[in-house]
Amino acid sequence: MSRAVAELGAGSARGVAAQVLQSVWVDQAYAAAALSAALDQSAMSERDRRLCTELVYGVLRTAPHLERSLAAFGKLKLSDHFLVSHLFVAAYQVAFLSRVPDHAAVDEAVKAIVAKRGKAVGGFANAILRKFAQQHLGAPVSFVEAVMQSSPSWLRKRLLRDVGEDEAQALLVPERAPRPHLRWRASASLPSWLEGAATRISPDLPIFRYEGGGDPRKQREYSEGAFVVQELGAALLGYLVGARGGETILDVCAGRGQKSLLLAEEVGTDGRVTATDVHEHKLSALRGEAERLNLQLDTQAWDWTNPPPEAWHNAFDRVLVDAPCSGVGTLRRRPEIVRRLTPTDPARLSELQTTLLKHAALAVKPGGTLVFATCSVLLEEGPHVIDQLMQTGAFQPVSPATRADQLLGISAEAPNPAFRLLPRKHDTDGYFVARLQKPR
Image 1 (cartoon, one colour):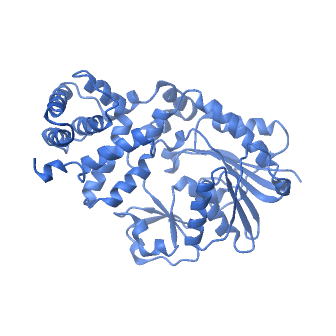
Image 2 (cartoon, one colour; image 1 turned 135 degrees about the vertical axis):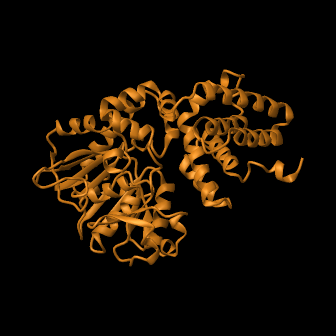
């Protein structure tokens, strides 16, 4: 067998997609990170990069449908992730990509399988894929049907209950891949390449929807700390905190800290941001990003299932709790989490969120603001948590004026202290956000 055939699949769009899927299934990797790393190492054209991306996310959204369909023609060994990934990539193309000839999708998958598993396994793959292609011609299933059939029934029911059919479908079956957004530093000038490659979403916010090709992080300005690549909803959440110059801010669940860094820029050199997380390695990554952006903040590992240190009690003007959650609001970007969730997860995480919020509330100054958020749209992970805190009488709802309010349709005449960001309505991931004030 020639070297070219032996390496077939390793560097092609289909082969890279299969490798990424194996990382997601075997190593529990996030698809976005695994795909980004694979694309960075490849020499594929922009067209093939787009195909590879579509294959990864398409297979993840329809895997149960593909599994059931292929299993009708032969017994699948699901633990053989190499074989399954190539079968699913080929079957997805046959079923849902009319621009890809069936024979091309099948032939490349079979050649990659033969190179790795031998002719016998390749023959099995060839037979099962050709039977699948024949069945699909006679009884095609739409992509939307396949995704909905592939989503757990409990999750579909909860999404329909909590956000309605349109937004549920926008999360499970996005019409297009979410576009990256660039949040520009106020101190940085806008380069010429930005014009034509990105659209500013609001005159009040330095956020641009990136529509150009390639990875914007390869631009010189990124290494110089001029901008960050950030999901739009996450950036808006940072602005919704309403931070002002000179204030003290606490980010309770900072993670890798993009919101912490936005807040550090908002408070300026006269203010101070303290970013905490239970995972020190995330804070280490945050410190590296702060160095790239030339921003100052404090970091400290802290487990907020415990009350805060005495020195933090009543110490902060504003406290952000972007709490751990099921992540169902991110399904349009992270379809792999569907397979990792169980029906009991939202209630379990709601209990954790309630504990974190209760302890974080201790750090808010009298007259200060507490902002609670989750990247979930389920009732258990938003309204129910806030209802419990409000019953204590320790906080009251508030709708502070922020630079993001106008974009979201929030006005002084129509205050909105608790609301959702939604993919169809706002072109963001799904979030619940509540803004509260501690009485003086």
